[in-house]
Length: 376
Image 1 (tube, one colour):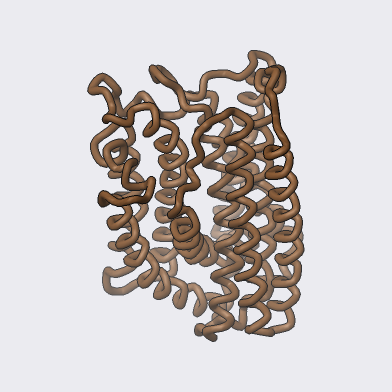
Image 2 (cartoon, rainbow, N blue to C red):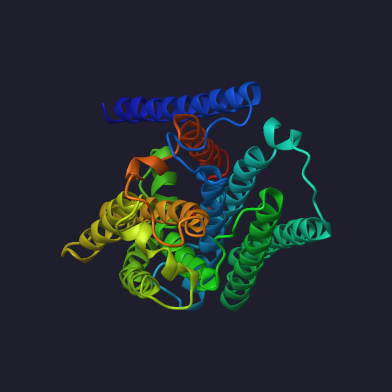
């Protein structure tokens, strides 16, 4: 009976992710036929970039965070860290490819390519540097994978740290590419490096525990003792990372020279307040804190907390991408007629994000099915 229930659950899982991919492909086809399509539904002044660029940045940070946290776990010799043998790095590479695919769909749609855009040498230089950094980052993921396989903690940590540095530099350069492409303001302010690094720690600590748990579920086996021990260790690590991130988030919203301070009205009471309080704070910080700090922490609660924290981090990326384009327009404050719903993604863009996420989950499922030898 249990085997039958597991088979039904797996079929439902595959139907869910394949259905999401079909929805995403339908949305892409619509954009190819209809042109650019509306990024926002009913917004009076539309930012150029939105959900797909946020999805791209989210997956790149997930990728860097997985490598960074895996290396930290090895270096600190966390209980169960010996089970880090490369599966997390495989998922990191998959996340990077997914992120690059999402931004490629965004920048190569027919409407944008049909525009007679005057691109100067700075655009091509930024594009070349971003491409080189991403290529080097992929190379460093291979180095970290081999280091984890050979149980070399210092090399694993160094590769994860250098890889994250390359990924962060590539993100910074790709932000310049998008800025030059549409002459839009960049969301990569002076606090970008610190904010992204903390986000990488949150996402790495959130997603890495899901790797052995999802793998065990897909293979209809219980996770071995050592990976379960590592999941518990990562749960304790999240208990330290989330408060640090919450302190940074609070400090960044106070008046100051950083661009993030000028975003405060839009996040706290403006058109993005629903995202900020509901998803960034509520789903991404408060609910994970309850699950992690409540006595009797279990593996499922750690996994649920990680999933909720990842959702909160996605909305953080989305809000920062959008608000950076609104704050220069409404420097004196946002008009009262701008409603919160004005800057939610349109159904077409939402469907493309769903398709991207389901593609990532489908490829992760295949990875677990075809390469089960690396548990972590």
